[in-house]
Structures are given as structure tokens and as C-alpha cells.
Length: 169
Image (cartoon, rainbow, N blue to C red; front, side, top):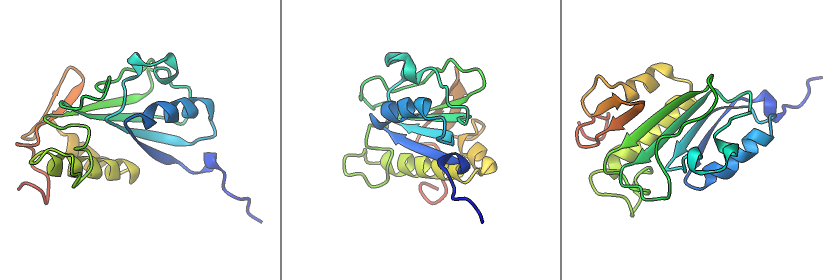
């Protein structure tokens, strides 16, 4: 007879928005039976502004954190994140002109002209990470395309120039 699956038997990706980031990361550090290999943090607080519980990652399953934030997101302390783990892949992506509501398609509080590209980018990025589609993931963040740059450890997406299939081309 087969045994029932446990949390640590199923590899997961967590998508965390805004204030939910802090409590989830705290739980992830305390619960090493959570087999979360990747986290997509959207408009989430930067760990250097919070207690060390979120800037030191102790969960052995976590390998990648992708931080996405908008240049016009005025939620307290969003932005590039630094972690003290050397084996953790951290990707920081800033979306120019995006506010705290532009990460999701058709949000009525989103910015006209920014929300469609920003929301679709976040959707496709998250899908690529969840589905472990490394080719699609790398294509989305490739700085050798118009509208995406990479400088000082941060990818910057310009929604007015970035070409995203089905949105602005």
C-alpha cells in the first residue's frame, strides 16, 4: 500500500503579495516540512527593513526568490531584496510606472497603459516559474530585448517598450 503524500513530498511555488510575504516567509523558516522551492514576491516588503527572520532563509528546500515591484508602488519598503544565503538565487524585477495594483490584470485601481503589460508579465512570469519552464522564464527577463534592462542586480521592465505576446505588439 502506498503512503499518503505529505507536504514535504510535493514541491511547490509560493506566490506572495504585499504584507502576506512577511508572515509566509516567517512560517517557511519555521516549517522545514514545507517543500517550497521558489517564491514569487509581488509588491512585498524588503527583508532588510524587517526582522532578520526574513533576511536569513533557513528552509532547505527554497532555491529561488523572484521579487517584483513597481516604481510607483508606495507600499512601505518594497524594492530589491537581499538575503544572507549564498546558495539562494534572488532575482529582482522593477516595473516602471507600476503601482501596488498593477501586478494583476484588470485591477480597477491599476494604471491605464501600465496595468495590461505589468499584469500579464507577472502572470506569465509566475506561470513559467510554477511550470519550471526555464526557457520561457529566461525569455521574459532577457535584458537583450527592448523594454528590459539589467543594472546593479535589478531587471527593469519598461511597459511602454516591452513587447509581450498578446498585449502590446
